[in-house]
Image 1 (cartoon, rainbow, N blue to C red):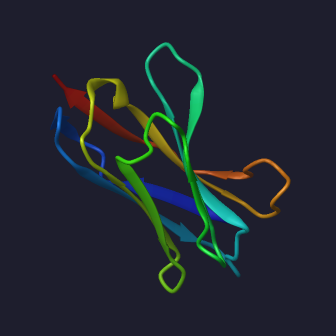
Image 2 (image 1 turned 60 degrees about the vertical axis):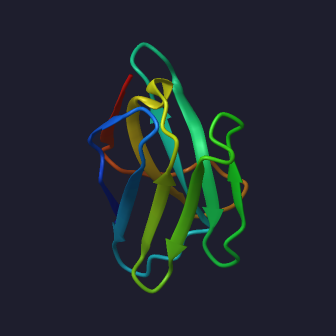
Length: 119
């Protein structure tokens, strides 16, 4: 069973930076892709960024393009999200996720880490 554990969330001032990490564990971990999602208070969960495990191709939500960067370390089974120029509207619980097959939904999820951006 694959387990994902996020870390790095905290309170930060607007304009600041934060780096989230997600460590994956489990037998023969080899996802098709990993991603970051977030859920702000009172809102639905939304896509933030994704990266393919083998090729490293990435994609971002329009709201974070140019500010956030997703990366992965295949040797350490980790995926990170570098967040720069943070805004109060980035405040949310951030979730790491992994999918085994490209065309299917993400099937593994972490517990989430809280990011709070103060104005």
